Image (cartoon, rainbow, N blue to C red; front, side, top):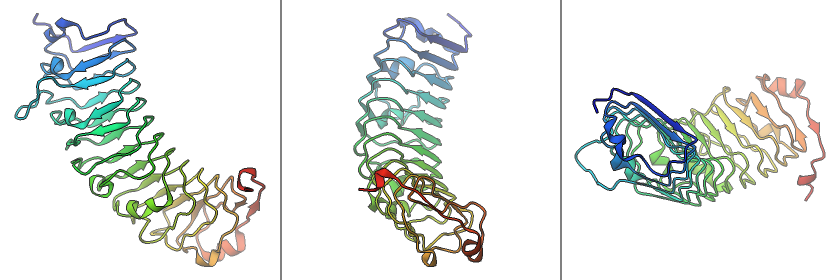
Length: 304
């Protein structure tokens, strides 16, 4: 009682549930309970930690995260900023459970078995969300309110299409990674509406042709990674500025019509293609014609 403990770490234990007496730690600011046997967490049990800033429940056997006492008018986690739930066994997640966490800035749900995302993520302070290494086949973000989110990572899932309402929910995102999914070529027009995006990574998907024009390349984009897809040609008639670096390495590109390539393209990575015309410092059309050296390679996976 009257304990002033601020930090508690319990790692590599045989705990299967939260200790009944953990509510005595009223001054707790940081709680780590990882590498243990925890299977379910009732957030109501942690609601008394009004000073909690960091909660790390990663690397357990967590398959259920819920709040047994629904709240609508109070915020039981007024200061909670970082929440780590990675490397558990969650199969679904209801985003409504995070709504009371008004100060949440970092949410990690990676390395779970999540195939269903329900509810609406309303997190006005959230700046980073990680959903990588799950089993998502679809996502609906139409009710999400995440005005400060700048980083979104959804790598290594099974998405054949982009999340619904992505262009509205992710309007302020500057870094978006969707590597190793099942995305098709028609996604680029939806991504083109993300007006603030600066870094976009789409490696290891099922892209066969990506039109890069004013409808598909956001004006703020600085880096576009399309590596490890199945692109057979490169069409870049539009580049918003000469700051943009485009990476199309490890595809099946065998020819380029330089007359149709934007003069603003000054950084291009093409390693691992049948035709490699990579350049990173050529700045004018004349330089491309006079200095560019292209190399041809035999790429067995492209022969078929």
